[in-house]
Image (cartoon, rainbow, N blue to C red; front, side, top):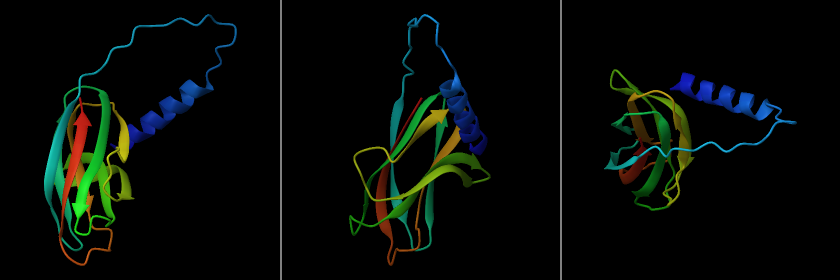
Length: 138
């Protein structure tokens, strides 16, 4: 997944560096990739983590939204998305966050296969917390 992020950054830089002056703008049809939403709920212990696998069936947008965590509801935890390898989640993107109604992580999966979402203690939990995270993917 780290390679995926690198590829996306390079593709983004290359496309923004193109000079289309003098060319005619044409519109090409866009296709929408169908997505699925999966919601995972579990508990994260002090200094712990919770990993949930999901499968990306085609190239397209992926997002993760931590929709609930606590108590207390204002606690910050780590949220990450990556690839699943030997039971571990090799994070490609992560953020320290509270629960929200908007996605905290979003990107594009350029490969199909096993991915994972991880919720983890960033060092401030004094007791286990429950969480709910929604992952949207193709």
